[in-house]
Length: 172
Image 1 (cartoon, rainbow, N blue to C red):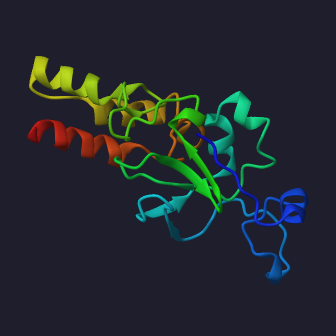
Image 2 (cartoon, rainbow, N blue to C red):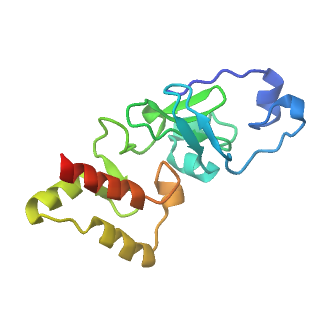
Protein backbone atom coordinates (compact mmCIF):
# COMPACT_ATOMS: atom_id res chain seq x y z
CA UNK A 1 0.00 0.00 0.00
CA UNK A 2 1.30 3.44 -0.93
CA UNK A 3 1.64 5.87 1.97
CA UNK A 4 2.43 9.53 1.46
CA UNK A 5 2.57 12.33 3.99
CA UNK A 6 4.23 15.49 2.68
CA UNK A 7 6.31 17.36 5.24
CA UNK A 8 5.70 20.72 3.56
CA UNK A 9 3.05 21.39 0.96
CA UNK A 10 5.35 23.69 -1.03
CA UNK A 11 8.03 20.99 -1.15
CA UNK A 12 5.59 18.49 -2.66
CA UNK A 13 4.69 20.92 -5.44
CA UNK A 14 8.17 22.32 -6.13
CA UNK A 15 10.23 19.14 -6.50
CA UNK A 16 10.69 15.56 -5.54
CA UNK A 17 14.07 16.30 -4.06
CA UNK A 18 15.46 14.01 -1.41
CA UNK A 19 17.40 17.00 -0.11
CA UNK A 20 16.10 19.13 2.74
CA UNK A 21 14.73 22.57 1.94
CA UNK A 22 17.39 24.19 4.11
CA UNK A 23 20.32 23.11 1.95
CA UNK A 24 18.95 24.97 -1.05
CA UNK A 25 19.37 22.09 -3.51
CA UNK A 26 16.09 21.21 -5.23
CA UNK A 27 17.39 18.96 -8.00
CA UNK A 28 16.41 15.31 -8.04
CA UNK A 29 19.21 12.81 -7.59
CA UNK A 30 19.42 10.11 -10.27
CA UNK A 31 20.21 7.43 -7.71
CA UNK A 32 20.52 7.88 -3.96
CA UNK A 33 24.06 7.34 -2.72
CA UNK A 34 24.98 5.29 0.32
CA UNK A 35 22.58 3.22 2.36
CA UNK A 36 19.64 4.31 4.49
CA UNK A 37 17.74 2.40 7.18
CA UNK A 38 14.35 1.07 6.08
CA UNK A 39 11.63 2.82 8.09
CA UNK A 40 9.94 -0.51 8.84
CA UNK A 41 12.70 -3.08 9.54
CA UNK A 42 15.65 -0.70 10.13
CA UNK A 43 17.94 -2.75 7.84
CA UNK A 44 20.18 -0.81 5.47
CA UNK A 45 18.69 -0.26 2.02
CA UNK A 46 20.39 0.69 -1.24
CA UNK A 47 19.32 3.43 -3.62
CA UNK A 48 17.56 2.43 -6.82
CA UNK A 49 17.34 4.19 -10.18
CA UNK A 50 14.21 6.15 -11.03
CA UNK A 51 13.74 4.09 -14.20
CA UNK A 52 13.55 0.92 -12.09
CA UNK A 53 10.76 2.28 -9.89
CA UNK A 54 8.92 3.77 -12.86
CA UNK A 55 9.06 0.47 -14.77
CA UNK A 56 7.73 -1.62 -11.88
CA UNK A 57 5.04 0.42 -10.11
CA UNK A 58 1.41 -0.02 -11.08
CA UNK A 59 -0.16 2.32 -13.61
CA UNK A 60 -2.41 3.68 -10.85
CA UNK A 61 0.59 4.64 -8.73
CA UNK A 62 2.46 6.15 -11.70
CA UNK A 63 -0.27 8.77 -11.98
CA UNK A 64 0.10 9.66 -8.28
CA UNK A 65 3.89 10.05 -8.13
CA UNK A 66 5.32 13.31 -9.41
CA UNK A 67 8.74 11.74 -9.93
CA UNK A 68 10.50 8.45 -9.35
CA UNK A 69 13.90 9.65 -8.08
CA UNK A 70 15.28 9.13 -4.60
CA UNK A 71 13.82 5.72 -3.70
CA UNK A 72 15.62 3.02 -1.75
CA UNK A 73 15.06 -0.74 -2.11
CA UNK A 74 14.61 -2.86 1.03
CA UNK A 75 15.88 -6.37 0.31
CA UNK A 76 14.94 -7.80 3.73
CA UNK A 77 12.82 -10.85 2.92
CA UNK A 78 10.55 -10.49 5.97
CA UNK A 79 9.90 -6.75 5.48
CA UNK A 80 6.74 -5.59 3.71
CA UNK A 81 8.47 -2.46 2.37
CA UNK A 82 9.85 -2.73 -1.16
CA UNK A 83 10.72 0.93 -1.90
CA UNK A 84 10.78 3.99 0.32
CA UNK A 85 11.66 7.66 0.09
CA UNK A 86 11.18 10.07 2.98
CA UNK A 87 7.57 9.45 4.12
CA UNK A 88 6.61 7.43 1.03
CA UNK A 89 6.45 3.65 1.37
CA UNK A 90 5.75 1.28 -1.51
CA UNK A 91 4.83 -2.36 -0.88
CA UNK A 92 4.13 -5.37 -3.09
CA UNK A 93 0.61 -4.06 -3.70
CA UNK A 94 2.11 -1.00 -5.43
CA UNK A 95 4.12 -3.04 -7.95
CA UNK A 96 3.21 -4.73 -11.21
CA UNK A 97 5.62 -7.64 -10.54
CA UNK A 98 5.97 -10.07 -7.66
CA UNK A 99 9.11 -9.32 -5.65
CA UNK A 100 10.55 -12.83 -5.53
CA UNK A 101 12.98 -12.19 -2.69
CA UNK A 102 10.20 -11.23 -0.28
CA UNK A 103 8.89 -13.91 2.07
CA UNK A 104 5.88 -15.80 0.68
CA UNK A 105 6.35 -14.54 -2.89
CA UNK A 106 4.95 -16.82 -5.58
CA UNK A 107 6.62 -17.23 -7.92
CA UNK A 108 9.85 -16.52 -6.07
CA UNK A 109 11.58 -14.98 -9.06
CA UNK A 110 15.33 -14.50 -8.72
CA UNK A 111 16.10 -13.61 -12.37
CA UNK A 112 13.52 -11.36 -13.99
CA UNK A 113 15.23 -11.12 -17.38
CA UNK A 114 15.35 -14.85 -18.06
CA UNK A 115 12.56 -16.14 -15.82
CA UNK A 116 14.46 -18.12 -13.23
CA UNK A 117 12.58 -18.68 -9.98
CA UNK A 118 13.37 -20.62 -6.83
CA UNK A 119 10.65 -23.06 -7.90
CA UNK A 120 12.28 -23.65 -11.31
CA UNK A 121 15.73 -24.09 -9.72
CA UNK A 122 14.33 -26.50 -7.11
CA UNK A 123 12.58 -28.57 -9.82
CA UNK A 124 15.78 -28.76 -11.87
CA UNK A 125 17.81 -29.81 -8.83
CA UNK A 126 15.26 -32.49 -7.95
CA UNK A 127 15.13 -33.83 -11.52
CA UNK A 128 18.82 -33.68 -12.44
CA UNK A 129 20.71 -33.22 -9.19
CA UNK A 130 22.14 -29.97 -10.52
CA UNK A 131 21.02 -26.68 -12.02
CA UNK A 132 22.33 -24.69 -14.94
CA UNK A 133 20.64 -21.47 -13.82
CA UNK A 134 23.84 -19.44 -13.44
CA UNK A 135 25.34 -20.69 -16.69
CA UNK A 136 22.10 -20.06 -18.58
CA UNK A 137 21.80 -16.53 -17.23
CA UNK A 138 25.46 -15.70 -17.94
CA UNK A 139 25.13 -16.96 -21.53
CA UNK A 140 21.95 -14.97 -22.10
CA UNK A 141 23.54 -11.85 -20.59
CA UNK A 142 25.94 -12.00 -23.52
CA UNK A 143 23.21 -12.63 -26.09
CA UNK A 144 20.49 -11.25 -26.14
CA UNK A 145 21.56 -9.18 -23.10
CA UNK A 146 19.80 -8.36 -19.86
CA UNK A 147 17.58 -5.55 -18.59
CA UNK A 148 18.20 -5.81 -14.86
CA UNK A 149 17.90 -2.05 -14.32
CA UNK A 150 14.23 -2.08 -15.32
CA UNK A 151 13.10 -5.66 -14.68
CA UNK A 152 14.72 -6.54 -11.34
CA UNK A 153 13.13 -4.72 -8.37
CA UNK A 154 16.59 -4.21 -6.87
CA UNK A 155 17.66 -2.46 -10.06
CA UNK A 156 20.83 -4.55 -10.15
CA UNK A 157 22.28 -7.78 -11.45
CA UNK A 158 20.58 -10.95 -10.21
CA UNK A 159 23.59 -13.30 -10.23
CA UNK A 160 24.27 -12.92 -6.49
CA UNK A 161 20.61 -13.57 -5.64
CA UNK A 162 20.52 -16.61 -7.94
CA UNK A 163 23.69 -18.08 -6.38
CA UNK A 164 22.27 -17.47 -2.90
CA UNK A 165 18.97 -19.13 -3.86
CA UNK A 166 20.78 -22.18 -5.25
CA UNK A 167 22.80 -22.52 -2.06
CA UNK A 168 19.66 -22.16 0.13
CA UNK A 169 17.73 -24.74 -1.92
CA UNK A 170 20.61 -27.23 -1.84
CA UNK A 171 20.90 -26.96 1.95
CA UNK A 172 17.17 -27.12 2.68
